[in-house]
Amino acid sequence: MTLATGNRVPSVNPWFVHTAVIEHVQPELTSVVTYRMRLLDDRFASDYRFRPGQFNMLYVPGCGETAISLSADPAQQAGQIVHTIRFVGRVTDAISKLEVGARIGVRGPFGSAWPLEDCAGRDVLIVAGGLGLAPLRPVIEALAARRDVGQVTLLYGSRTPDTLLYASQFAAWARQGIQLQVTVDRADPTWRGTVGVVPLLLDRLRPLAADRTMMFTCGPEVMMQYAIRSALARGISRQQIWLSLERNMQCAVGLCGHCQLGPAFVCRQGPVFRWNTMEPYLRVRDF
Image 1: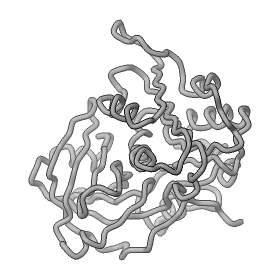
Image 2 (image 1 turned 60 degrees about the vertical axis):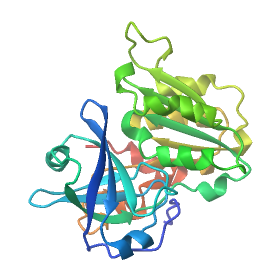
Image 3 (image 1 turned 135 degrees about the vertical axis):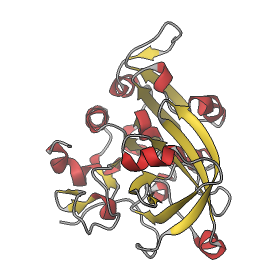
């Protein structure tokens, strides 16, 4: 079976660990921080290229490494990389103790990318839940700078208002022409927006030119599956729906086999896949 994955960039030496220095630490949410890093090898930094949707392996000596999506516009200053990280395990907890000036190992970039080249002349629907907005932020920034795409709409939700990622950027995105709708599962006394799950925003979205709309989605798998169900009901083609998966990625090259899902190794052939390719295998429960 041939898998429909996102676009790929030229391969890099998958085993060589480069060194980066942390230049800025931006707290986002409780246990979520964005790190801006600079690659120290000038030659590697000048050659380093990634596409929205790809990831790096971040390595802490004596602790291990973890796969983290890149979360800033690839058009940023050469040699800089940005990762938004949730502290949920041994390696990310070790990263949480690093401050400005600390060094960290980097392998990458790896994986497939969102098919931005196919967005010309189309509307783009971006559907994100929780920390799933991080791998999609480069898409938002890249599309906001283009003039050859139609309406770009971002539907985003999180559990509560205080867990909305990048909330300080929402106004700037709106000024750049992004049609933004935000929802939360549970409101607090200060919330004046929509309450409900993300797929409901898609159910209510008007207007929607389904025949010329591409959809990119990332977030909890249950959210993505229900959002895709809503998109299909609205007439968006299976071939125009793309999602990002991050199941059990450990080595970045498919050697260890932990990320296998059906015929695919998520870290090697993903994380970005076309929906109709992965639909049968997402019935397998994540663990």
